Image: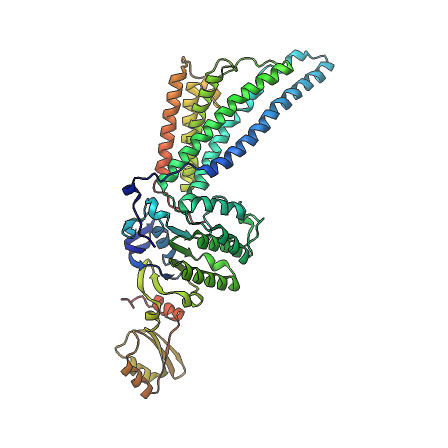
Length: 257
Length: 292
């Protein structure tokens, strides 16, 4: 058996792209995205159908027709999904990888890659969803209206939608990672991390206009929103949340189940 | 590969799990880590595999520390009863798929053969398997990983007797074909003693002794005969246990018998029988003062 040689001596990179979990979870993400795309058509038609029934009872059908973005509402679930999956990754995958001969440092880097790629893929899918919705609405003759508590001014402003999505999703991925790793350490630490994570994504997301589900927070801030400032604020929150995650992981003792 | 455990201590709150533990293994060897429940076996293996940091002390492999060392860590496999897989609701194929991705020496064909030999169900989720089947999954992972240092932390205790015998046979076969270091933590000593080359006995967080199995077995002797003669014979010897049956006394000594002592014992009409490893272990761990 050959003697062990030091990786630092040879200068080789020891972390790697977590291809296998990425492949699995991107597949699940795509499946969910496909269901949501179908959902736009289904929900839109249900509303139309309801309008026809309501018309029989003398209601003004214009009040009930599709006048807002269904995708805009449905894609709100994306932040929860990305936060949950990265939390799941930190709670289940990362300890299993450490138990299989990987270091905490390498698995933490890989978790960062996983969360970053997942957030990027989800952002692209959210943006493509708006393109798809435009086509569906054009065919059906529905109206999308204008976005509410978000940084982008129009549902057709795909570049801004992509930027806003990726900034928000990165923040949620880091929050999820922090919660997942904290619950692995202890339930008390996990509960505390939930409060910290929601405070961070709620305040930064709300104040910056990367509102997500915290639109009610956004309405409390009477500030001129700027995409660049919001993007930087979200990235800073992401770095802080990722830092707490590393603090959890760096000396993580593996539980014996 | 040489494993050195140097003054490792570990505490869980007020409980001192390991207290300045020192041990050395110069592989390839099959080593038994023996100890009673709560003696610190799992804690020691956890530190040796970098599953948790020690409070103090170091563990090195060929002189390099194991903690956060990617090259060393990839050479070690610690298999625990939980399996340490990424999802309790995964099936065997999924577990193997990830093992192949994670483990540089993963032997897929061997894993398939072992899964067949242990009759592990392919379509049952891990959390729906019986304890024996889960243990078998751990055993298969440990053997097919082919890590230069493979530790089994009582992984196989959930298996039934035929499966355990199959495990011991497979482990020996593996050891002969691809010599490497196996460390078996167990309290099923009688079963496993035939395959152990070395033993480390741990008790209350301290290493009681580390020695070759054959040397250890030569140390424990039960002297049986009339109580007065036995007492007279063992005077000055290291007595680690005594049992009486009527006027007959059986006294266990630790330290072996010289040729002249054997002759003397025969002349006194005393019987002397070497102890089985398990009996010796019981005496040693209930007589803490017997130390090297």
